[in-house]
Amino acid sequence: MKTNNVFILTMIILVLYSCKQEVKEIDPVALPEPQTGMTLSESNQLLSDYYQEVINHTVGRKLPDIRISDSHGKQFQLRELISKKNLILISDAFCSFGAEGLSNDYPKALQKIREEHPELEFDVFCLLVKPQNDEEYPERFRRLAEEVEPHFPDYYIISEEQARSINYLGGPTRYFVNKEGIVTNMGAGISLIEGRIFRVLLQNLRD
Image (cartoon, rainbow, N blue to C red; front, side, top):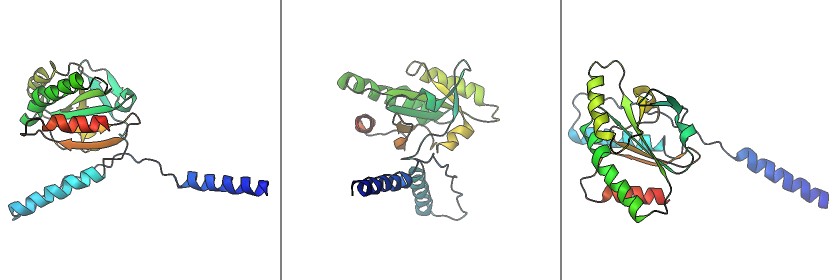
């Protein structure tokens, strides 16, 4: 009888182990193609559906093996830098909202969190998107870097292709990532409502 019980227990463990699914990587979602003659309501619905699809294919999934570089050109694997709870902020040189978010809204909110909640341990990675084959990029990027550097001196550079691979939504996009490299939540943009960014960051960094 004892042998039978051990056999049954072993079989149960094997079944449970085989049913355990490996966490998938982020699945890039293509931008929707607006159609001629669409009404404003239809365009808004198209964007809303796209945003939800991005959430569905990003949250709960692992970061892919993407390469980033620092301002000196040294390259890193993003996943190798992750060792605790993380906030990843991404923006590009063509988005004024992104520059405003990374030089004002997010630094203020993060400073307040660190002052009021010193028990929270997390890292922040600021990634700036480098467009491909854009003649205006060097000057635009220089201005963005100058605005961001005082607040995120250790910023990194990510290619446009790599940004698309993690469903970058435009500046600034935020990803909350756990120490296993799994995205637990994401969002985009800044808020005109005072204190909202602080509340969003605090809630997700606490979870």
